[in-house]
Image (cartoon, rainbow, N blue to C red; front, side):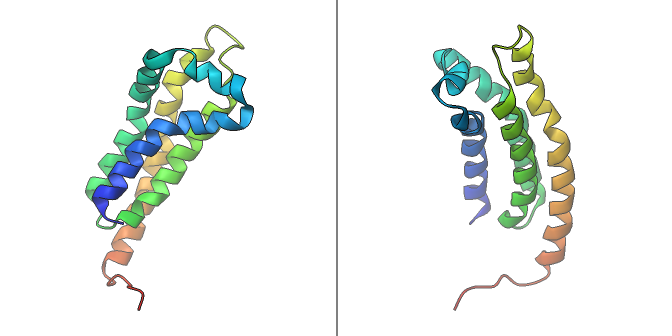
Length: 132
């Protein structure tokens, strides 16, 4: 996978992770995010810019697209867990979680980004293996 394709995949995944995380809860659970229509979609997309924007910044440092998997799994993993467990009807302030969860996911992205950078630099000296 090229770096440009990896960047496109990160943006697309960043836009749909909140919805994918709520699918196991059923229609009512997913509906908490979709009842707002396009306004709610744009709000969630704006909130998730923090996550996929951070991953795109790491992609500028890496030499190989495969290195992006480490911070992406860590960042999107926390994002998916949090959005999948956040009940927006539980409390009036529960919707603030939609703002803070992407900010909290920056820590795993930074940690995963550093691990990915070490892995990227270690493997950059080796030529890529191509299947015969």
